[in-house]
Image 1 (cartoon, rainbow over the protein chains, first blue to last red):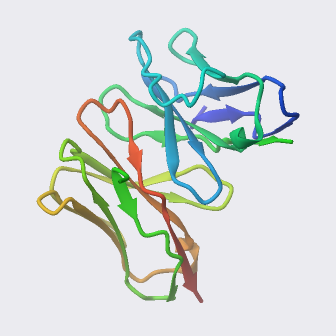
Image 2 (tube, rainbow over the protein chains, first blue to last red):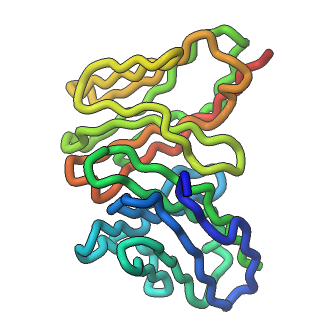
Length: 113
Length: 111
């Protein structure tokens, strides 16, 4: 596709359920980032994948959060036992190997009720 | 103290005005500086990026970086109602392992 694709665009889940958020980066982009944006806040870094290197997980807020990237392409962010404070927009971005610019998807709006 | 500080606004200007948006930062390792525009309920869209200090112009937009002051700016000339959005500054060190974002400035350009 032409841009970074995220699915679902909206997700409402009950507290305590697990959710999976998907990101399809731009073809050929080796770097992939997950960020979280809470209402009226800036972007909070979660995790960074670069090629086959070990991911930088330093931004994951708790062990309920995990992410993987299969085949250097599609990434899935999993939140286990969701809490109301997990409600936010989860944004994925990808970056090509040479350039500096990161391109964002439209985000997944997660609401935990 | 946050690594990147940005005035949240909101900033309201009449159509045609020159808009100045700014960010300050504390980490001298930052070398790459970006501005993103985010419309309501959309993902951030890259507007401009610059490397190190200096100016960069693209149409009505000019980005300035002053590394000695740890201060970056985005100027919008002849602002249009379609420029109404939240503007996020972002920066990174050379390893690009993460981008550090400001909290965003909400801009409203009134017709």
